[in-house]
Length: 430
Image 1 (cartoon, rainbow, N blue to C red):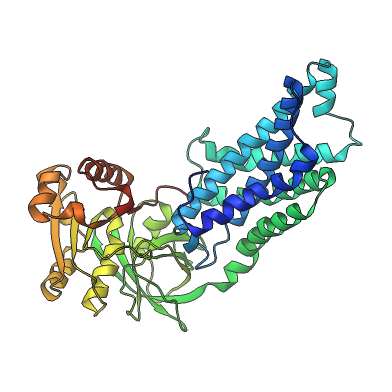
Image 2: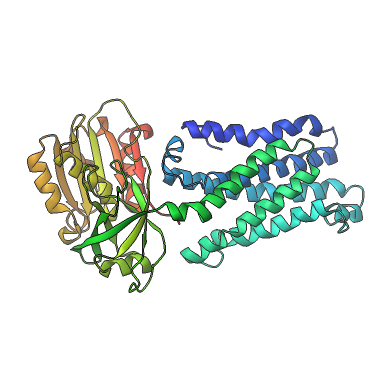
């Protein structure tokens, strides 16, 4: 696991080690022969594998605010994927090590160790958990191409079966059962919340307007039916449209960044045509109902030493900066100066150009520069230095397509900007 950078990481590290630490008195120390080492490795990796599976489920608890100790929901997603993949590797090591440990006795004993009589239900619970694990993880390995979003989400329900069977396997074999009860409640409880409770806690809104910004890009203006949500700059929500006339995406939840100022009574969301659901939303009917869940993320939420800021946004990744600029225009406090570079292919793809120009005229501390790939090619150090001479001394925020983010990170690192002052957000995963 990466070195802890957030408070939530420390908790995860402690929970990962808890069942193994409790089991160590029973496991003891491996002997001097290879078979003893393999047996110890098999049992320890099995404990770690199930622990990581349960924690992967636990961090999927998508309650607003839960993500912040972990660095925001986008980072929590990455932790979820890392925990799940590592759990699968640990489970495979568990099986192979226990089988190999018995080979020196005889091949028959090795087979009987892994495939005992059906009366030894604890072992077969483990095999059934492994089968369920393979079923719901296989699509994420990309063997059959990128999985369909909604089918993949439904298939993830099999994870609950894998966890339940894995828990039965562990509880029947463990000496101390309380760590498994603790982690089991956390993991299965998170799944029950997500699938059973959370869908009924979404906030209802009405689509008040659909504003065309460019070809394939619109901004939805949403009016709350009730109190609505409170959000900070740079956060995002899950939007579920209920328009029966939609060609795709009805009843499906997808993440979109908020483009409105925190003080705005309307929720504004920029949506680019990037798939079936977002394509259908380009022509969604006004006054139809949508459900909003969130807000999530902390793109600007962490507090750093007071510095001027540099914002670099492109594509639909410009939306968190739209919300920030609109917040300044509405009177939000500005600590220092902000310089926004809008990286677009051409003027017709600079969706919010006019908004930024007007805000820059009104807010002295907000500077705005547009950069068009068609005219200048990729952003260079010379262009940055010409328009923002002190850019290497600023706190820097990046949001946009993965290729753009990778280019900017290389450029900034090459100019000596430490990674601790470069903050990025990109939605390049399911």
